[in-house]
Amino acid sequence: MNAPGATPSSLDCLVIGGGPAGLTAAIYLARFHLSVVVVDAGQSRASLIPLTRNHAGFPDGISGNDLLTRMREQARLYHADLREGRIESIVRNGDGFVATIEGSAIAAHSVLLATGVVNRRPAALDDAAHHQALRDGRLRYCPICDGYEVTDRRIAVLGTGDRGCDEALFLRSYTADITLIAPEDGHELDDAHYERLRDAGIKVVGSCRAIALADGAIVLQVNGDQLSFESLYPALGSHVCSELAAPLGAAMSEAGCLQVDTHQRTSVPGLYAAGDVVLGLDQISHAMGGGGVAATTIRNDLSDKAPLRRRRP
Image (tube, rainbow, N blue to C red; front, side, top):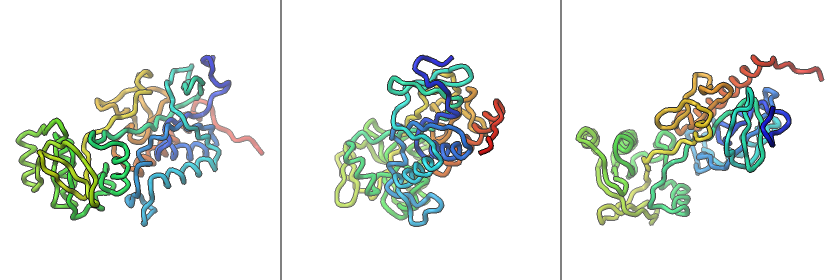
């Protein structure tokens, strides 16, 4: 029996999140002739990418928004139903699920969570400055994606501890001019951190009190000095958007990432996950791959319950 307000019949799959993982899954599912709805809150980190040259097939680069637009068009071409909104909750409904959105309900035999993560931003940058810094390449969040673009440039990493140290050391293979700057609360580095950073020739200063954009650079106020850099990498961590899975009892890592098997199944039957909500690798290609695996697994698991047979036209 469906929950009050649920649709009379259940979808084959509800995809929550319209980033690269969710849209890839939607394309696959629609091409499997399955009914699929994608609900997207419009917060994909891909939309923040001004230009990526790291995504295979686009030698001249492509913006995150252009890529998402193409993927939406492709999903709609195969009759995936794409909706804007935010899923508020998911509950069990027999062998399936019912999701609540703005007072109405969507029933589905399976659910794919592709809800991603949200980067922790530098507190000293307001929304307008943050957007401009991203657009101009002064602020970057993914050294794997765009470390090549900062080759031999003057770079700052905003962070401390293992995360800040590791990111600065990773970037050291792109440039010799790196400064690790503490957030406003100061550094949390031990002797081993300092030794590794010193051996790599990475400068360590702190704390950052203000950030501004000026003359084609990003300027950080540190201990009364104005330090100018060509790009800044915040290494402040991220928030994993896995809250919808918690009431269902899905297994998670300490960081909140959903734990899945090699086929993107969570510990809850019928609940799947793909993209950065599983592993925050920050890679579009990895998210797409996970979405494709999840969609294929969903199709096969549904077929195991009730064989999928195409009717004659």
